[in-house]
Length: 401
Image 1 (spheres, rainbow, N blue to C red):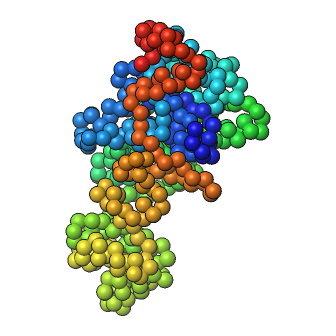
Image 2 (image 1 turned 90 degrees about the vertical axis):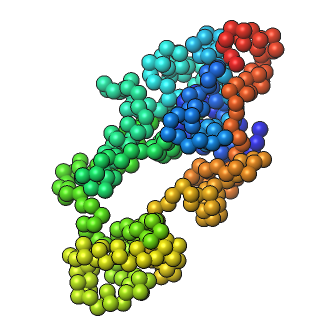
Image 3 (image 1 turned 180 degrees about the vertical axis):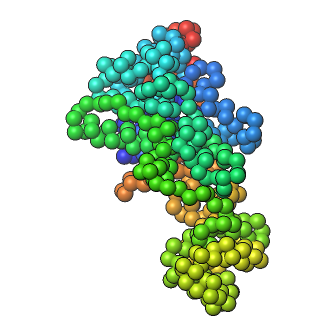
């Protein structure tokens, strides 16, 4: 087994799609031995995501590459008692069991916490749901688009103005931050186990993570705050924390929070010294009182130059800004490469997206390409003590692929 912070940690990824399996991926990045449990035949339905209408077409299964790097695949039909027996043997020796199957499915397959906790008192049982495990919606299926994005208020809050239709989320947009929450819960439980010697159950859900993400404004609502009418971009209260379109169609996002100090440098960057003398914009209160007029001026100024020019000018004056990135930027983003946000797969020139945490003194595993369905079934079963005859019996019974 490879070295790493979690070398020797045995993790069973008995989950589907993104949030829960991605937590296992982060553990694998730091050296954990992760076995992906998936059904024979089609495998985890997430494998098929790129084939759905509207998704980008590629010769590579990009979705599966992200979530299942470094893992081994064991294909088990958990509806069959013989397959469950295999799983129970694995659980008895495992450190972490991860699932996001709906509660009724867990009960049916006999992999709910109460079904397996007695098999291993040191096991960390990590479960992930859409809406939590209590209340009327506990058994309701949820996706990040529904339970994280829409339910939390974010889908409404990010609209440009109140007349704009709610914005759709993109694939995995909420699942990946939720995966970090589940990862954090698992690591916290592992720390608890170090202190107590006992495992436990940890939980997280899409709804809770969504409200956590929108919590600044959600907390304001909980405190009875009064909200102003949402303003469109052209009516923003502060022109220097607004976004502007460049000549080549890109968008610059200004964030001049130290406005009084940065205003002279900003006018220099714009080559508009006249704005310094304009009484409408002489002070911060003046600029805010006349924000609509200033926005109109800045719209005209930014439309005269291309994005690359503005980026160089703003950086040259040390001004704080961002830009609306597009996917075409990412493969050549040197800052991402320099900071290992983008890393190559082992023995491949294809880049993948690293998990977003680093630990001093620890080197992450070089990402390996993901497994095919049941690629490691025989290997795993043999390490468990099954001989060729027993493996063939399992396969004949349809319990394993």
